[in-house]
Length: 98
Image (cartoon, rainbow, N blue to C red; front, side, top):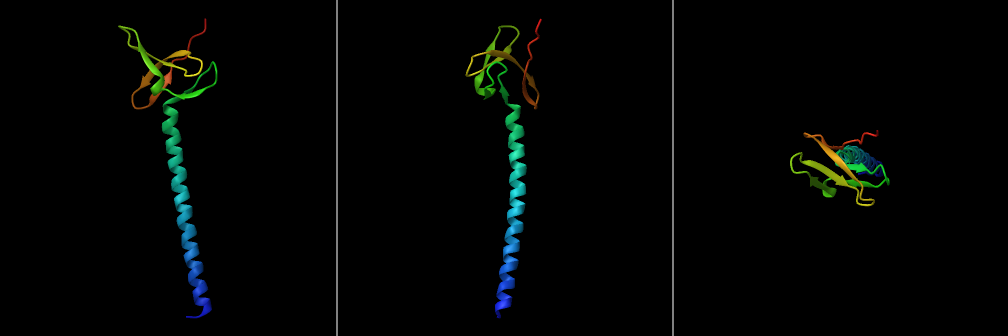
């Protein structure tokens, strides 16, 4: 085996490793995007203090007959009603200003 043959083999191995790394980076990027989309379904930003928080651990139920669910900002304690979207996560009910 000559010196050139060994270098050619090393170059091919290096190229195959680069291709594998590029493929894995693309897959990782897609997974990051998917995680971001999932997280965004269940998080919100408080319009009073700007804190970003997860809706699920900060919710509480109110009302005997109407079953309204509210979320409370962990920083400023502002309560905002939630509205569920089947399979789509949750969204805050925007307050109507009079």
